[in-house]
Amino acid sequence: MAQAIETIDVAVPVSVAYNQWTQFEEFPKFLDEVESITQTTPTLTVWKVKVGPVEKTFEAEITEQHPDERVAWTSTGGEVDHAGVVTFHKLSDTETRVTVQIDWTPEGFLEKLGTSLGADNHAIKKDLRNYKEYLEGKGSADGAWRGDVQA
Image 1: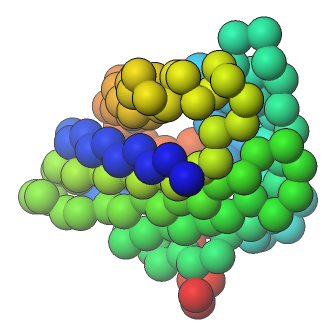
Image 2 (image 1 turned 180 degrees about the horizontal axis):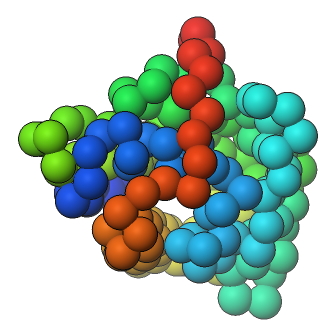
């Protein structure tokens, strides 16, 4: 299993950073490889991603969620085997550190090669920069879901 961990500091309060992250259907605005996300229940989402010419669909279930602290998930079906967590750390009243960790199983030669070359970390780093630019440019989240999901 491969693992990618990236961190970015965002110039918004922790509640704004967290609230935006709970708006899964808005992810295509800042995650380049995500074509669409449909939230079917408060804890279940269906993702369509495209990396190069390869398109994949999978379900992800929120396995733990605590407002302003963390969101964890795992894939439950489809073409991708992965799990992850994003954590939010208040640096000040106006700055938040966001850390993303994704554990996944690369399939096929190209995914294994990309992982060995660090393409997964590069993609996450790029997407976090997009998230930062999007959120700092707006200054507010598109919405919020502040429900608590116990592990």
